Length: 171
Image (cartoon, rainbow, N blue to C red):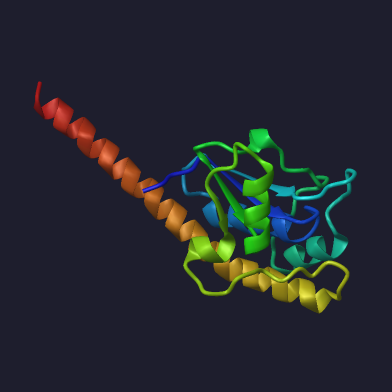
């Protein structure tokens, strides 16, 4: 059972899908009493660019506020044994493993959720309808991912408490 202290969503430019995904995840885990850091990164970030206004608007239409951050490049130091990295398609997953020697715990979002779809469609350069479809696809997947992550953390907590109780019984 893997438990993670940090979740990083990765898309191409870190202006649409990954910041929407991070916002959705933050909303899903809010109030769960687990200290999980949720961030987003891009595969190719040539300069600091604010999140796409269409992505921000779609999140707002779903009563979620995206932070006013700029795009950030994924780097080797982002990976770690307690970090889960979720990408939008199998090509991104392979590229991360090919590019970063510290890459670990990288999954496509669909793979992590156990669904057969292979990718989250990129709405970049398209209309608001495509951004909304993307957001809704992300929301369904991330609700599944959040449930899995929270369940694993609860199980780990139960095991730790059981171990502590067994230790006190021995005294």
